[in-house]
Length: 183
Image (cartoon, rainbow, N blue to C red; front, side):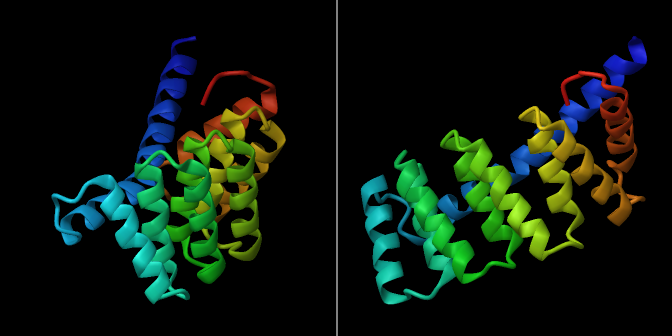
């Protein structure tokens, strides 16, 4: 029982760290807009600046990423998702763009869409261990244990020496045994 609690606590810590990293991407974009946009601009001005940037550079994934962050900062999550999707469309192999999109989708309550986004990314980037780990964690958290098991197994295959690999192996064993601990 104590070992299961320690393993569960460790897995929860890992999920918290990865989720924090995902949200950090959006925060850095927003902070960048504040710092480089004058710092004292109200949220609406940041949004207008981001829109202007997209108008000047309609093929720039970075401009759409900034627009997504500005919309998210204004709690306009539907528009934020649309802008982040456009950034991914322009740079589909960019994990940074995927992270922004997933963060906003999760924040908007679109967990199923976030899982689909990660599935699409991992299908096209089958050697990206971190993406498989995140897919496993998100699927696990959503109760999609079959998908979680497949994603975790791929992560362990790609990154057997990763610092989190042992915890992922333990979670895989739990999933195979039908243990219902929360990751």
